[in-house]
Length: 216
Ligand SMILES: [Zn+2]
Image 1: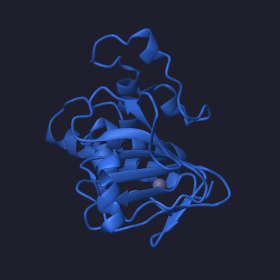
Image 2: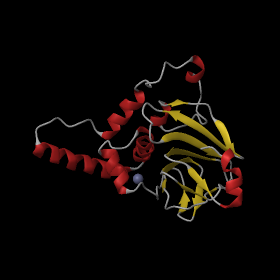
Image 3: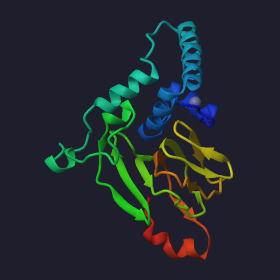
Image 4: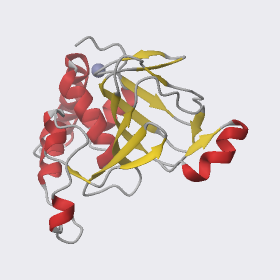
């Protein structure tokens, strides 16, 4: 796997320091599990933080970010016990990265023509939410910006926008400054893992017309 697009360094540092909420941490964690370069960066930050802590006072270091992430995902959700129906929801794709295989999934729904969304149920998602996004080959997403942040990791297939082409393992960061219109590769469907805070803002008359119907 050749990875060309990585998370910004401040996000990796926040991941290492345990400052991300569960949805963002999940996306960074799945990317880092596939990306030796980002794992090295996270380990270096953890080492620096550990050295600084040791000098400050002799407290024991917290577990590293990966172990914490895995432990958090393995914890049962704080919500009421799952009913038989919510436990049995299968992910949109049965060949997911290891970290995602232990997640619980909500019911998938169609959000636009050729686009399906499946929520991932995490213990602590007050700020952002995580979901799988499946798009049919050649889907042209509407031009949009964000009121919050959008962290996207390609799991299968590809999409492209003015930032370049994004293939499996590639990470894309979007916020209010980014105005983009991704187009899904024509050869196969695209499956992405997304963490999103805030809302999408769609542009143009078509965007305004359909935005009440496009719920992400
Ligand atoms: Zn990376």
